[in-house]
Amino acid sequence: MRMTLHTDYALRMLMMLGVRDGEPVTVQQVAESYGLSRNHLLKVALKLRNLSVITTTRGRSGGIALARRPEDINIGAIIRATEDDFAMVECMKTDGGACLLSPACRLKGVVHEALQAYLAVFDKYSLADLIQNKDALGLLLQMEHGKAPQRAE
Image (cartoon, rainbow, N blue to C red; front, side):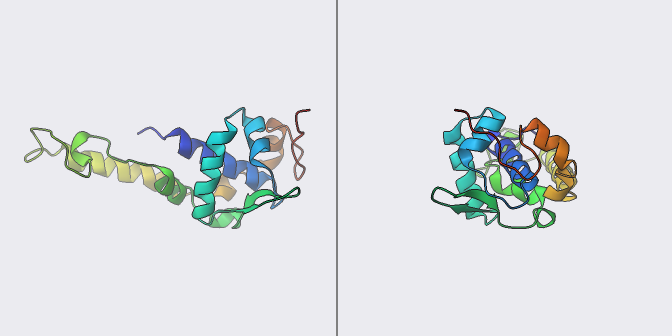
């Protein structure tokens, strides 16, 4: 199983916001900290806002912030909501795929079981678990704990 970049970026954005302790940060600041595309992160932020995981505020002092406590943001739920397709093999596609073996194949059941085990690991963790080392994460994101990252001039 391989996560899409959209899911990877969503998790990284949430981790940065979790380090911020509720203080807003701009999508541009997230993009600069991670060296990622602002346009792609805007789509990620929109998805997370639609999931009611983050809030967005327009204006000079606006930005994005967590809408829930980190303890209340389940990583498994985020992955399920941001991944487009869990069809790991052709027969798991919504249309059933076109595999000749589908009527008698047991692989689909094994792959489904493996997928459930994969997601079950993520279900055990919240955003709070991922940001227990806020100070170290803040340094790596080039910001002090609780302070905004420096804007590039």
